[in-house]
Amino acid sequence: TDRSRGLGDVYKRQIKEDMMEPLRYLIVACSIGMVFLMLLKMFDMIFPQGKHFHRKKYVWTLILIYAIVFINVGFFSREPGTRTDVSLKLFETWGNSMIAHAYFVENIIMFIPYGILLPIAFKRIRKIWMCVGSACMISCMLEVMQHMTGRGYAQIDDVMTNTICLLYTSPSPRDRSV
Image (cartoon, rainbow, N blue to C red; front, side):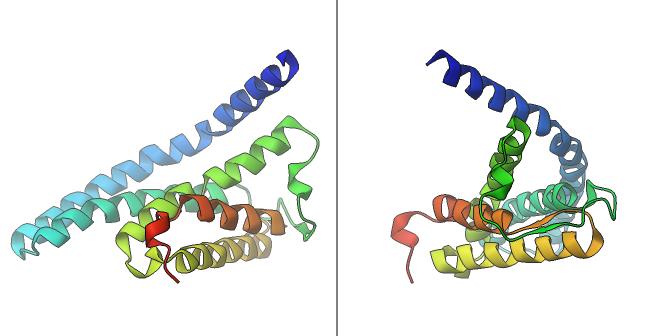
């Protein structure tokens, strides 16, 4: 109805505003990525690597760009010591406010590139259990580091949403071998 359509617009607007911060990091990450790609191209010219390397260098550049943005958003975007809480209660981050809902959705969005890029780069991660398991491990490590440095709340919700996200973004069903 009109009320739910209005809420959807509010969510979209809040998420759009929050996504402006990662764009700052994306500009720097793309610059670093372009330098990395140029270095890979020079390496390939000096020591020819073949077609396989030619295709993979673009994927590796995208992974580098994603990693830079991911680390900045998940870790360096906050002052050390400003967030020290731990939450082991499921769905606590959903909260009652639009901003809480937006953070919940943004946390899911943050892992979408992981489920797309890493299976392309690593054959082992094409197996769904490897992709989801590695994402869970990365998410746990991020939460622990955030807690240890006070740069983020350690929340089981973040690990859960990141891991569930990978179930939907990881390799296609025909590649989901166990």
